[in-house]
Amino acid sequence: MKGLHGFLAIMVLLLVLTAGCTTQTVSNSETAVPTEIPTTNPTVEPLTLVTPAPEQTVVNDPQLMGTWYLKLMSEQDGTAQVQMINSEMTLIIGDDSSITGYSGCNSYKSNYVLTGMTNSFGKGITIEPLISTEKYCPDSNTTEATYLEILQAATSYIVNVNEELSLRDDKGNTLVYQRMPYSETAVPIGS
Image (cartoon, rainbow, N blue to C red; front, top):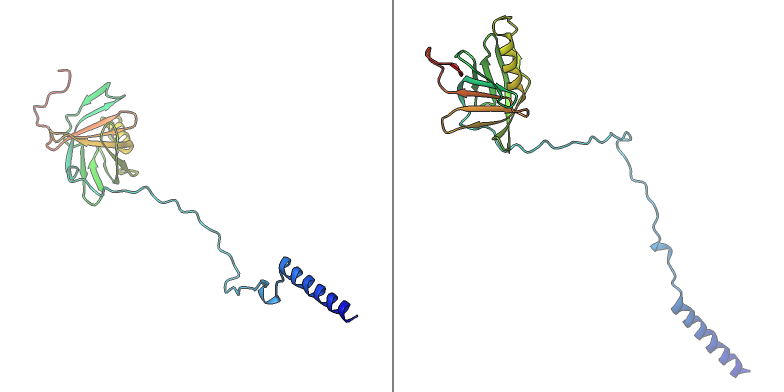
C-alpha cells in the first residue's frame, strides 16, 4: 500500500505541476481598480474652434508709401477708360497700414493689408471698409462712387517702372495713379 500511496502522491504532484504550466493566476494586487480623479471645477467649458488667420508675411511695401494722384480709372476689364484730369483725387498710403485720400468730393480713410500672395496682375492687397465724408457733389458723384467701389474691391497692385501704381479688383476694374499731379495742360484720351 505504501507503493500505491507513493505512486498516487507522485501522480498528484505531476498533475499539479502540469496544471501550473497551463494556467495563469492573477493576484489581486495586479487587478486595476478605478480611482476617482478629484475635480476642482465641476463646470465644463465648451471648446472653441480657432482657425488660424492666413500667414501675412508682408507688413508694408516701401514702393507703396506716399501720395498718389489718380491718373486713370478703367472699368469692364479696361474696355471703359476715363482719363482723370482732377489732380485732387488722391490716395495716401502710410507705413502704418493706413490709407487716406480725397475722391473728388469727399475725404476717405481705411486700412490695408498686404497678403503676401501674388497673382497674374501683381501682389495681393486687401482694403478694409472705407469710411468717407458724405458731401453731395452732383458733378462728381457718379465718378466718385465708381472710384470708391473699385478702390474698396482692390485685390492686387503693382508699381511699374514708370512709378505708376495700379490697383485692380477681381473683375479687372483698375485705378492707375502717379506720383505727380497733372498739370493744367493734360490732354484727355481720345483728343
